[in-house]
Length: 364
Image (cartoon, rainbow, N blue to C red):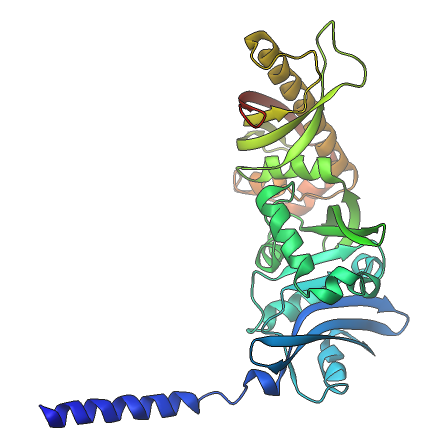
């Protein structure tokens, strides 16, 4: 029995020694890139990176580096030439594209990021309304390398931003009958702000939508558990011209039905929405069934009209982030992407929204 225990102890010790020698890339001999930015310049690309320098266990000092290169592919070697330790992308959580870079096309960058096995598929991408370098130099980013990615996550969970990350972007980019989108950033009073969504055609930044349309897009793309918009009060003798109330989505379900595969195609869209309302005009009594019904009609009418306008906006810009083309493809054996694209602006939709208010304010 004692011999068996001795052998077991010896095996455990040997395993521990072997595992300790298995990986020589300890944190104090490499530098990790947490956030990177790309900007187009005359003869190539400017890459800017926020890097953690681990000086002692549990503590790190943030460093900021900028380099120019011919393409995305040699940006890492050029960054390495400025550092005393090799860099890794294993902790990368954010890649930001300057507006000029995004409008020229980001295919190369997406493919480079997705091919690196050390980069998580949950890494976030974004577009700036100026140079990415200037955004990354803002105080919040210089103090917290994950500030932008955390902002995106927070707005996905609790705000108006649909689910998006590197994996989903790659899927939308190479999927037939759909276009991808990315969060859009600006600066307001020297503070970073997420102000909407950048819509892409193929790999080029085409146009930007604001927070309200971001909510509608989220409503149309997923069973939304959150998000909010201001809704005008209409249909009452007491309603003024500039009266609004805040509506928060609690749960939604959207169903698409292909009426005609076309071309041009025809699609029916039905949205069921459970909502919370608060910050209503003073004359509205939230204990009154009649006035709750009035607010529900306001939500339905407003959302139906705004969804129609939003889809028309997508068609006028020739972008399809909702994947309506993919929906048509799944319903026909004779899918022709070129024919669908030619007739995309003629695609017709009918929109129906059914709203139910299940909470009224904090105590509803």
